[in-house]
Image 1 (cartoon, rainbow, N blue to C red):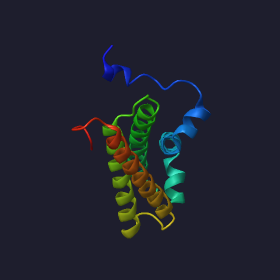
Image 2 (cartoon, one colour; image 1 turned 90 degrees about the vertical axis):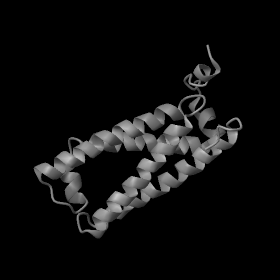
Image 3 (spheres, rainbow, N blue to C red; image 1 turned 30 degrees about the vertical axis):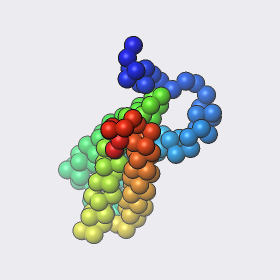
Image 4 (spheres, rainbow, N blue to C red; image 1 turned 180 degrees about the vertical axis):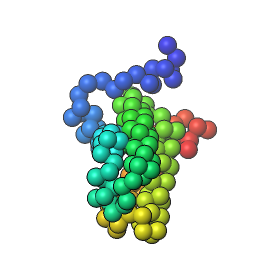
Length: 151
């Protein structure tokens, strides 16, 4: 087995030990789980969630919201998957941060354009904070990488 394949083995059991060994990684794993769960909820319950965020609930907006929810499941699941590997993929962490930054911008623009109520800024700033944590973690992964392979 190559060194690269060995680095992708699932993390050994011991959730508490794993979380205390790297609290930032554990927080990001929790956020990834939250991302998956909220994405799953957006698909069937888009209408009520859109109304809660002050947006119109039409067939078109529910469809788009459900599509966004599906992508949240995919990106959150991919992030969780890599964080549970012995050595997380820096590329997955980086692109997850890019996605969260984009989500912050998209929701913020939606609020500025009156699509969402200011309540949606809570979601936007949660995404921004997550993006910052992901970029910090990505940089840390780069510092641990062999020379020439750093982010």
